[in-house]
Length: 347
Image 1 (cartoon, rainbow, N blue to C red):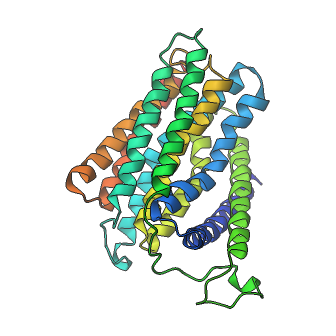
Image 2: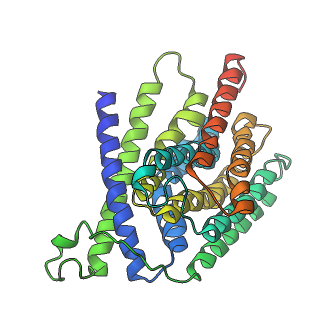
């Protein structure tokens, strides 16, 4: 039965991602926003909601140290999965679809959008991880860091909103356009109201599907011989990162690479600031390398993966799908580390 729930949840998430990518493009077009604001802000925030709820529920409603540890593991797992597995899947999609893409294996990116995201992620995540090295008894500095992270994210969003509006070439008809009988049909633009209805409906599908998917994964993983740490650090984050990954694959298929990459890198900035602030404020004593060293080790691999993928882009101003495949190697490295530690009886 859990397998059936997994299949149904995946189908719901996929349908929601299709509606969301289509709707959020039209939403950005109606508001005259640039690609950075659409992909790295609107799409990133929307698709980051499922995994943001996991640590929030664990820390606020779970109760106890173990629940807080799961929350912290989920917070750290989100950027790690985006920087490794999501990059790999996106790169694989680019390679597999290269013959039907105008740019082929090369990603036709606005490097300024991606560089903006990577810079703010590096700043915010470095500060957040640095706070984990403070003495455990010092809670107030962690709360100051939380305020700083929120301010950094606000500046990141403001930077994208100030960018010039995108041309929005190749906009497909709004999926819900025919439901709006008061508006002329495509190619006339839909009304903002029906665009908003589609985006909200899509988000409901994504969040609901992700919740069912995570619960089904938990049920499958709760069987004999499955370690709870493995669930928190490896299995659950895979499920919660599905929306960003599927959105990016859909945009890659349409040749909209800035939106595809911005959805991932923008979500990374969001995850490094907002859920991290939740952990710093609500579980300050758990946000420490001394109590969750294995979870915090993922942060180091996250940085290494981003350096390996994006430094060549920043120096050569070119990125192709093969470079993103490196993320898969870093993901396997961390899985091997987790399994080795668990096999040794340490967490």
